[in-house]
Amino acid sequence: MANTEQFSCLLVDDDVGFTSMLAKIVKEEGGRANCCHTVAAAQEQIARAGFDVIILDNCLPDGSGYDFYSQVGRHSPASVVAMITGAPELSQAIELTRNGLFDYLTKPIDASAFAALLRRAKLRLRRPALESLTDGLLGNSQKMHEVVLQLEQAARHLHATVLLLGETGTGKDLAARFLHQLTFANQPKAPYVALNCPNVPADMFEAELFGSEKGAYTGADRRRGGLAEAAEGGTLFLDEVAEIPLALQSKLLRFLETREYRALGGTNARQFQGRVVAATNRKLADEVRAGRFREDLLYRLDVFSVHLPPLREHISDLEAIAEALLGRLCEKYGRSKPALRASDLNALKGHLFPGNVRELRNLLERSLLRTDALAHELAMDLEWLKGYGHAVTAMPLEAPVRDEAAKRSLSPLERQEYELIAKTLASENGGIRRAAAKLGLTHQALLRRLQKWPELRQGSNPGVRSSE
Image (cartoon, rainbow, N blue to C red; front, side):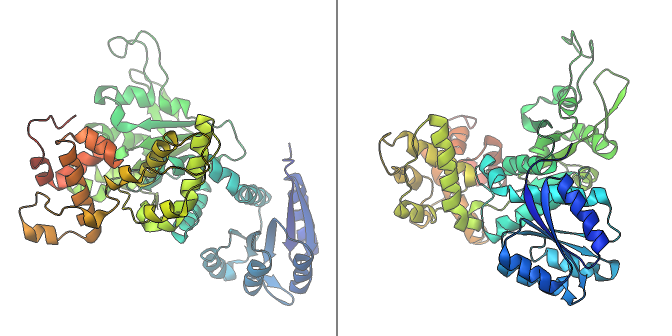
């Protein structure tokens, strides 16, 4: 059945029969098509009215689509523009994608490929709605714009495993959901199933992922479906994939290589039809060198990788992210949304944010719950923030590093993070879980930093258990 969602489409090609064929597909996809056959005619059309989608042939009687593309951007910046090109001009089209071209198709055009392009274009037009579903955390900076482009590109290749990289709290889980929405835009019921790998006991990992048959292990009194089965036809998200024990990584490797799996205790193989997304905050190449991660699994995972930058590297997005987060928090608590003060936002921009967006959300939620329900402005809890490195340069520098040469070898950001962790551990008497919560980090993320800087653990209070 044709999609009834309306959108306007301008088709620019000198082949009348060809544009008529494309116009029929546009109509089937719920669009209204206007056709023109020269650059001059296209200029007139765009001057009279804006178009949601513009399909541009590269070879036109009075000019090239390659040259006309820059004019389209100036006169119709909101349009989603795709190009039709022959093989000799393919390199030009590829170059334009780096400058914002949505996509390109090579002649001869396959009708199903053109219809799929239109569906993706409609999804791009809905991006504000998609971003609202992910708290707007993708941002508007150039760095985050590049992330969006990479996710859109990954969405076109369903069977390619996507690896999301980035520090704790950068929004890898939200990026995975965004990718799922992009991939299955026309299948709203496609399942999205997430597995937090370190939360599964090693002896239950295979059963959790692939399911188990009755009698497969003590207490297995019935057949139990696994998460791969639950994600069939949708997305299986493996979060913190580097935490999978080495002995179990071969099972994941086989699954990714063949897309086949067997329930624990079963003999029948099942084929997984869907997308696999993995995420980690570790450098997997370092994990391979340390003998904690299989090299062949790294190659299988890192087919299409997307790096989520830390908040400090796209701090220009902070205001937009904070506004989106605050709006969602107000919905959660059924409150009207107070305004963010400019002075508070300026203060936040000077913060290191070791916990990234997750730390920002924690601060906003904490501040909202301490703000009077009738207040017009958010009472930002900057005093709490100061305790976690807001005025980093004002921190005492007597961290427990004994080797001054080692201290000097740290980058400025590493030095700030080092001092922040040292101060927080000291304030919590060495309690790692409590320190991790204050820092906006997971317990495991803080433990990894302590593996890198073991003297920080040594400097904590030995009378307190480190797991607290």
